[in-house]
Length: 229
Image 1 (cartoon, rainbow, N blue to C red):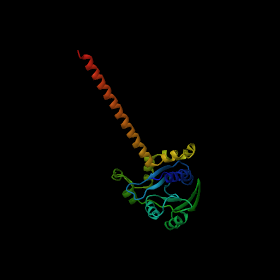
Image 2: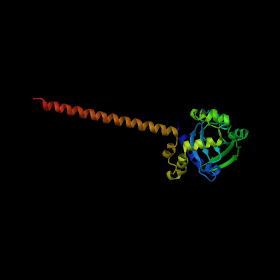
Image 3: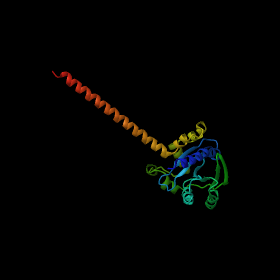
Image 4: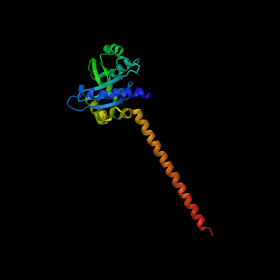
């Protein structure tokens, strides 16, 4: 993975946090999910924002991204979210505008921390069949009292993911956009970090075991030499 490309996208994500809160948050505090893929979905949303009334998917196309798959990504995301917003830079704005206009989704130009709305997009209801077949895990779908509703979906996501990601992104000013902090928000970086921590712990335990065995062997050898007449 290109680190510079990743950092560029994460900077846009950090800027998106406050913008989403102001646009869709209303009175309450929303939940922001990073790199979210609904159950059995074909398209991963770069960001998902859940407010008291909306479930919004944000697809980010930075200057280093390609937009060849944008149309197919949007078409699928529209079935899973009330709103789909595309956030891009000047490089892709012309092509993205043609695609978003045809599909009636929001389009926004990002320049640093400044957002300019190019297209507002339309709100859609999420179908019950979509929720049952694509969103919820098997144990939820099999509940006898389960009724697929947007409200149930919103509550499910909020309870599962909470507001920790939103708080983390909103506190980015304290980190002064440090590249290490931005990388730490990426799930691939998190997984690799956790793997490294497990690997380091394994080697520490292995070293401790080796030291312990050497100590035991030395003690046994010393005892044997002492008992020899």
